[in-house]
Image 1 (cartoon, rainbow, N blue to C red):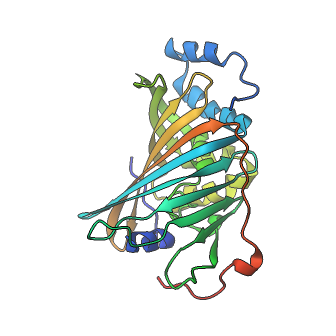
Image 2: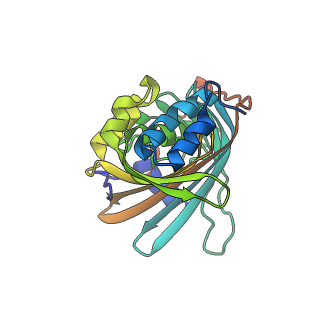
Image 3: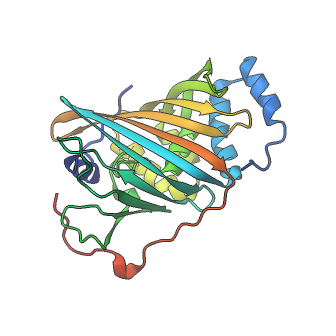
Length: 271
């Protein structure tokens, strides 16, 4: 089922315009065998969020956001790291190329923190050396699509609201493929406090309360890839968004530094 965000996503519109090992996983491989033998797929997917959090970090995060509106289609890709316990991370996003196929804009840097999203090289009149700070709980979509990349922590935590899940089978790399829908309200209620505000905003902001997903888990029950399919109305147009998050190098030390207050832009942002 499609989801529609009332009022659209301001920062996403600007982006388009710019055109280790998991602790506590004893018996996980046995659980994987049980899943293949007919365990409850929805419960398998829901508990995968806890397994990722126990893993601590992902030293290699890749994101992809494909957006289609009318006859226009753009793709934004990102790479970075994430700390699932501290709910902090950093991504460098490559914005869509220009009409001639050239990269016309500098990569945008995003830093995630509990309740906040920091963006550098945001454009829209923001000086190149300044950051923009956004309160995620104030966004109609809780930053699931606004920034051009779904917060990796939120992408995983959404799975706590999984329902109507089926086990598809193994993909070519031996990962277990599950397909179902996320109930946004359920995900928000079960999420940790640091992400509850953002997911609660998404649950209120989307007129349809479910989001289709595909999740790929390894034999330790960790989420290695998850793809959510969102849609909303922006400027009277239907916008379809497919957001993919891939996680590797679990347990690798990561360091995320929040921008200092003096570097936060306080001026007006052009829309």
